[in-house]
View 1 (cartoon, rainbow, N blue to C red):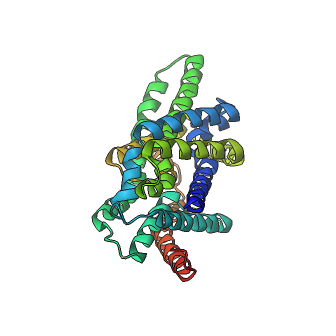
View 2 (cartoon, rainbow, N blue to C red):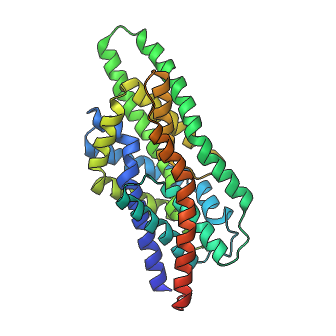
View 3 (spheres, rainbow, N blue to C red):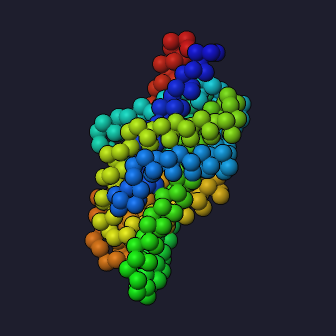
Length: 320
């Protein structure tokens, strides 16, 4: 049992570290790229607001991931390990291949996979709601980003002081990043901790703090290059459009948090960027949309298959 516990904690830490290493750029890439915050200031802000989000509001999505798909009692610690491992393997493979995938969708696929493997009654109604949220979140993010872009564009257009405009840009970048980091805590943290909570291994509060800490370590140790890349790409749209895309996507993820539905913040960001691109009359890269659709379908499906294969291997080896 002790070895299982250590394994579960290690895999959960690895997945959360990956989320922090990559997705934290969605929260603070704009602020760092624009020179508003230093890298260390950005990662400290991420750590604070991720912990707040995980501790205060993370329980809803954890409950959905851990108990809403496979009923309580079926998801043992062994099954939680398989679900996490399946997600981790697929995300690693996709990263090596350069494929854009969502850890959220991989975790959901892993949980469904172990549910099918042990012949548990999978809650397909809840799964349908989650899939619907995956489709709607980038669309809603795009609509909200368009509205925000026009609203703030109107306000800034009426301002005459350059110093006031620059100050507003800085505060918008910090505020948008902090809001998105809080949403990481409420939604993304559940991706790594939900199966452990569902297995009864640890409570939501402790799980939230542990995984949020791992996410923060990932942001601090390995997010520098990604944060600068995302920051430069987003700020190229302009400060107003960058903020609108960031804040619009955060609002969409917040809506999913209220409903307790796990969604991809990365795909919401893409939806926000597309929205402001349309509002600004910029060309929208259709390949980006194809990447998002690919993630909706391929990631959970592949994670299900990997989870089934791992279950079979563990079963043959007498490990379960």
